[in-house]
Image (cartoon, rainbow, N blue to C red; front, top):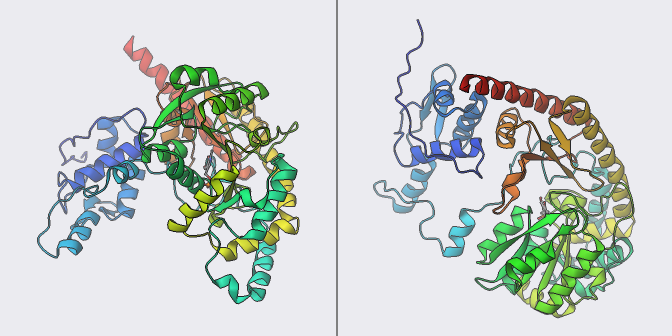
Length: 505
Ligand SMILES: Cc1ncc(COP(=O)(O)O)c(C=O)c1O
């Protein structure tokens, strides 16, 4: 006898274009539980019925159920279904606060306008501790990091650390590290500076936050690359800035378009060495134009060199900051990508007039960055290991990129075209034949394959159907398996599309 569905249809709000199927389904189910539409102890609709009702794959529904279970909203009982827990996280919090009868409090209640903006705009990405995930964007290879060497340097440092190293540190950072960085960027990136212009932070995101706090007032305009890095867009918006999406073409950010959209922006955010995500290098002419604009408008430029040292062919152009003379360009780089993300160390080379205000801002926000970690990194750089590591990683990443290009060529010919990539940690795969990037993304995600749709990185322009694929974190096996999985999914979507078109006729 067929199983009888006990649950009537569950109403879920329609999905907005910039939300993935998985995120939408998870959020909607969570709201239904938090708002009491799905009551404690009640059974959730089966994955089969939800999948049929909302036309999403069962894999995605199962992923959403698992996340609800992990976050304490439901209990999943194999064979009998998923049930809403009697006490869900919101009520536990509330009960702790009021010690009285349960009362519904919206989770954003009491937040400032900035708090609201931040609460609704978290850093886009997935947090799992997989070591070699295909095709996670923004993660360097961690399995190949020379951990033994690092721990030798760390234990030597700790053994010999004077007591002064346990005291409060300088807001701008550990002086010998700032010297070592000034030396490194001078040689490797043509950035002429002294340690007085170097500021140590916990990474690019923190550098952006400091700069936004110091330079932007509510309503100030910021030029952002379109498409571009959402971590920067969301942060500027959280500080009340008005983000102006400036289109990127094969020469990088189009300054003429920027001038036409809003000439008088206060700051421009750019990734000139290797544009995120399109991968183009900003031409010399565009660099000159951008600097010219900044001088005319008295504006600042934030140069985010998040992966520019990983160039696989040709000679890298010197950093934009090297053309500026130190007036308006803030050069930013991060060891979280050059080495490993949990290090949480990055730096900026700032115009000299900004060093004092940054030191003051740091002193009343995070005071200073962990001195012991800075000292270990300092030894790693001074003993020549950073240069060796970057050269070694260039080879490893170039090899991974080759494997990815070959796999796409053999398994996805006619369906996906990769952007020409000569640098960085990710490539863009343009989809053809009417394949929806969001659909492929969601189906792949349900099978453990990560990616980012190009349209998720746009502020308001509609972009071609494409997936951004990170290749640095994944080893050769993960890359091959990931492409095989993507190829199966894409062919399946194609067959389904043809079938639907046939029925419609
Ligand atoms: C373009 C770009 N800049 C900066 C960052 C963040 O760097 P960090 O980890 O140092 O905050 C990312 C992270 O993915 C990125 O893609």
